[in-house]
Length: 254
Image 1: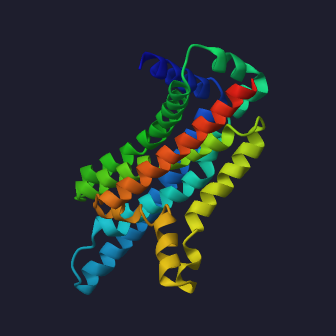
Image 2 (image 1 turned 180 degrees about the vertical axis):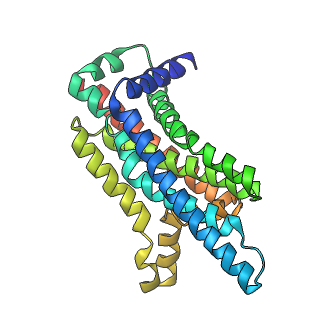
């Protein structure tokens, strides 16, 4: 466990020793803040119209928090490849991958440590958004459950993207290639169910199940469904498994 934490700490420190961490966190905070401001304006407008029309109060969770979380998932498509593209590619380019693979560390420790390091940076990204939730609870009356489950869903979705990104990064020494391919795979997981309405029921069910966004929707409603948890943990495990196989192949080649 100490080895895993040591690698995770090294990875997290390496992010903050370069502009990557600050750019990613700053850009995410900027876009999240913009979406928050836009959704807040829309919510206020709907509240005023509802009050004038006698329609009662407007649900803050449905009109503000849920769209905010859904829009945040779009940002992940562009930012998470920046986090994962260097994890193994930089090690290969600089030649430190040989030192890492010949050290008294198992593949499991190396992969888990790098995964936790990337997740640490991702958690820091999400952490800067808590201030917006604090403001909502200070001046509004939202339900806490959709907020908590929404963050859980973002963490799980991010974990899926990071595990897949680690695998892709382990296949090449070029960070740009790793980032572009990672973005392409992320986008495929995002749009894979778009043709679902034009195919048969069996294929439709498969495509909808493979869609990473379909499994996120219930989290924004405050629902923790076992099938969604199984899906996300399965994708994370599969991504780390593929990374382990790629690292093992690199070890044998070395």
